[in-house]
Image (cartoon, rainbow, N blue to C red; front, side):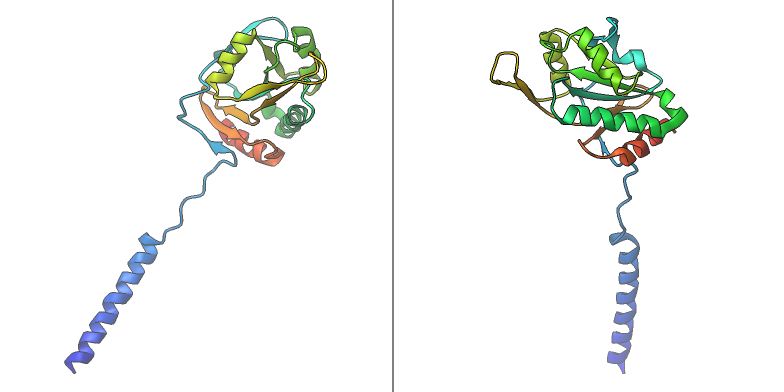
Length: 201
């Protein structure tokens, strides 16, 4: 009889323990709100000082109050750079009136060939409000270092026919000028629109 009471009490305690474990020990982690990688607080990408395709000196603080979408590339890029700019153009179209609160910046990694005139022709062809940025080779190297970005020149058949290997991905800032997200190459329009709208709201 005493043994039956013991097992009854043991079973009761076991059920209580399992119930507590289900409430706390097995709780599912909260879903992250962003589709892109949240890099809030990372110690890089704080600022730059470059020249835009209209010849005006620019820093990151010039765009405070807007969500800034920043991408590094070069005009002779065969695939990743034009694909990203086309994707960002579709993002702006999908945002509708909210696109007025977003600024896309394209920083060239090829200051030898990407002159102000070439950037002025290339970048706005994807969207008239996109801004191309350039600088001296030293300025570009310093900016790439600030963003921990890799790039290297790969020789071609002639001195002016080289390509650049470089990191791909898009940096997204909130309206206060803080770097918040890094979007992988090819992440897609839906994910970018989703994340930008979250930052706008």
